[in-house]
Length: 524
Image 1 (cartoon, rainbow, N blue to C red):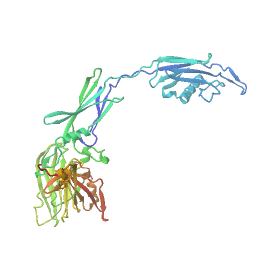
Image 2: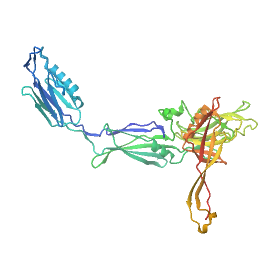
Image 3: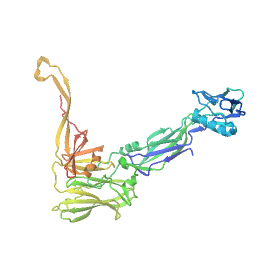
Image 4: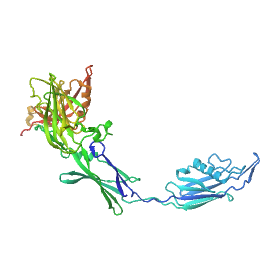
């Protein structure tokens, strides 16, 4: 193995959630190097108890010391019965009964670790009458030992010298992102990743793939067409991974990933652990790309709903509509049919009452509720989505179209009282007048523009409806319906006010600003 892909996303992913790839190379280390192995030999140390302690009436070993230098690290060891306060000591052997030397050296090792902290740099263990010292970190091969006593001599020997780890020069994992369309694969973006010391490197492709999905435009529906449309914010992609190293740097190995699919949109943080399929598929059915299971609409509200096909190619797809009228009668019909929806294809369906001609079915009756679902080959492939219709048309209705977090477009309405204001932007300049013609003024205004602002009140809605508006406020693309056309707007409020009526209903108020300033153009 030289290079491999050790982590990759699912076959289908949301573009705005993490799309992680992880790569592994075994070429980081060119030479693993070698640790210093040093032996301290205690065979000539403390073999005879030669000092008599008259005060305690016992024989003692004589105090002794030695100094070990490894490069710039100096370790001063003293074997003392009564050590000075300014230094640690290693223990003497026990005289009576005579302590085996191996047991004593084990106590010496423990003392070196506890008092001198040598285990931060070395592994220590006893082998016979020697202590083996093996380096853990970078260490010098320049070693000396100095004994403070001619009788107790600690010797040393070097079994292996230190050789540092050497790394492969100029090692990079070069990753190139390709998208696949009818014209073939196209390189979009690339990155040269530096692996860590374990040979791993990672890249989250959510940002570049979100940009790619929007490169052909968003999935805003065609307002002039009442028909099923195909979505554009989907792309297929793969990665080409190349290992580069050496002096000069050169290509050593290249591999290609399998092909994946990405769909523009994403799940909120609390659901981001779900895969794309788990977030929309229930058994053999796939949910519509909405953030709620039902919604309230007005009789004249235009609306759209989107659906993504995670299954195989589907033929003879029908949009089934079930309408419930005010007299509780039910009418079921097919609003649209589609010959083929290919695997990994997205469709946008107009589902307003006027758009599916439901308002003209029985004009003498009002519609209280309707629902839609998709069938393919006589089999239901989506859950039923329900719309509750407000039969009493409220005043001050305003419609908004927005892109939800799943990358699909839908509409909402507000019916609270509104107010309109204008922001005036202009530049002023002082001018000089001849003959003191004060009526001509001494300042001039230019670059004057009006920016319309609308203070909107949603009217009282249920808590679920209010929560569902989260996507509207966070949407990057919002439009407001006025004068028979959809106009782009943005939320200009720095905060959103919520009011409660005390009966479980809530209302929001906020300000939207037109993105089209009004100007007057004239000749001089």
